[in-house]
Image 1 (cartoon, chains in turn orange, blue):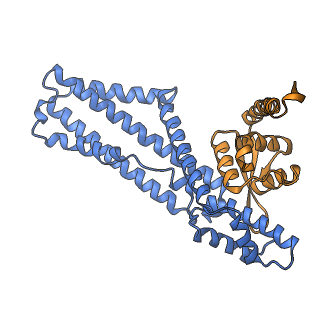
Image 2 (cartoon, rainbow over the protein chains, first blue to last red):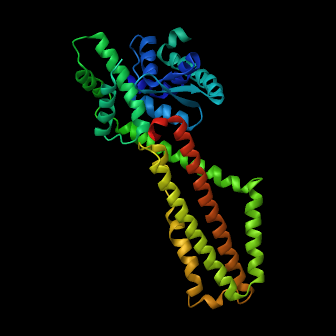
Image 3 (tube, each protein chain N blue to C red):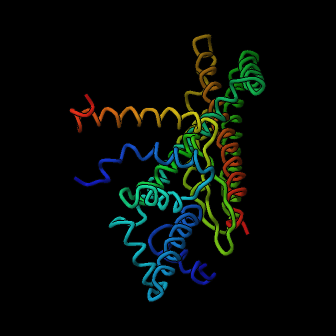
Length: 111
Length: 231
């Protein structure tokens, strides 16, 4: 099974959690951090990341600021107040989901 | 760090791959530049063009198109929400006072005026709406002209509402010359028709005002976020 289809629904809480822990981040940095933390197991594609970030911005979950870094501009994303609250809820939901999955994948140890 | 020429080449690369808007390009250019810098740092044999091809391949067969499409959809939604918020503000204090005053004045004018005068008033309202639309279109044109780069946030989101631009003012202006015009306000049965026209006029005016407010807001945001698109 394609790994990306497995974690597709978890992308939102993953990104929000990273933003909560690291403050402001830019797109490429997010992809690299996920890769680094999971030792290359999870790789977020650009085609999935940017539409998600843009949607979160429109929903008021994240806000953006532009910064000049030499000869180009960089767009940073930061969680809004509402975004921080939502992150806690999403991460809890993700944790419950992982526990439920564990009950199915490892029924003996879970019992 | 990439040179200015290499960064310009990335902007050009985005344009050649159908990313026309600066506000979308700027983020993609930074992403490409970061990935290229990393590739070139990890392997000194790789040149800029090879690194670019390799990084772009990572975007999949659709390239940038998915990102542009999603950005466009989200921007349109953002503009609709913003305009709706501006429109609703005319029904909350203090702007609601202006809306009520406008409606009440036109309502009582309809009561006081003769049939012919009311016809002329309706035509004048239609003409004023038409002039205001011309101003709005000019304002939109002037706003876009101030930009040196195309911005998705000010161009794509600002879709005009066709029936208000053309149909309504034309219909209102021609009422005075219509063969049925003498029937209007002849008796009480026709007064509701006048009230209906006034309601549609006031609502249309508010739609135009909220459109202008939305454009101003988008332009302000664009200036703050992308000053280079206005140099």
